[in-house]
Amino acid sequence: MLKIRAFKATDDLESCKRFAEGHANVLRDYGVTKVTSSKNDWFYNPDVYVVLVETIDGSEVVGGERIHLVNKKFPLPIEEAVSIVDKRIYDLVARYSDNQITGELCGLWNAKLIAGRGVSWFLTKLGVAIANMISMDSLFVLCAPYTVEMCQKAGFEIETSIGDHGTFNYPKLDLIATALLIKDPETLGYADNSVREEIFNYIRNPLGTIIEAGPKGDTEIEYNILLPKLQKQL
Image 1 (cartoon, rainbow, N blue to C red):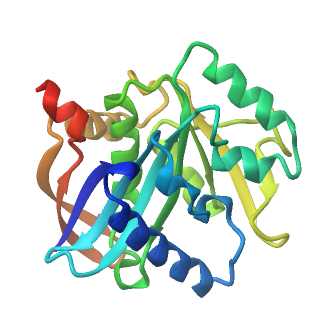
Image 2 (spheres, rainbow, N blue to C red):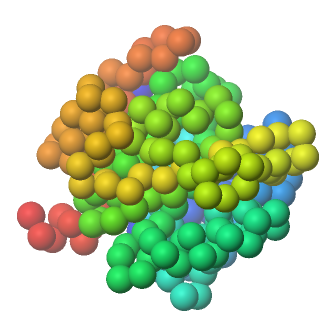
């Protein structure tokens, strides 16, 4: 059994460090050492929300993801990554942040211990749910080829205006990344019907326990994505 909780990065520095250590270890396992979403300046960014996956006793961090909102001090990881090969990413993000709230779902990872257990898919759905809960107007993501279809099911569309129809060689020349965007977190018009309903269920019920299915078996997950700011409003 696993547990998942959400918090603002600046509210829990120690958990941020545990997240970063686990993420770095997974990247090293795959021979990747330079990923913009793995930089640690986000610890001190007041516009970062963290989703942490832990063993049920809290002794080990085994996965997670982050949502970065646009602000003037910290560029989005996708801006830093894509600008190396296509400067148009800056104008694209600026367009979606003009009098709107935009940001990025990034840093999604899980330890080999839980690979194939459906956790990455569950995290993707929770990330979209949180974007809705914090009133975002759009949400970017940069993902590997094997997660493109997963993101599309959750409502993301490939952003073909940048790169080679939305694709880039990143984080290494022999790896491909694809930029995608949700333009309607409130309605999720491009999500699969069943996935859309599941995401809205997490918004209506931000605390609960579910059984998530994966190719290597089912996983029981206790989750709490009620952010402190939102808890005070209830």
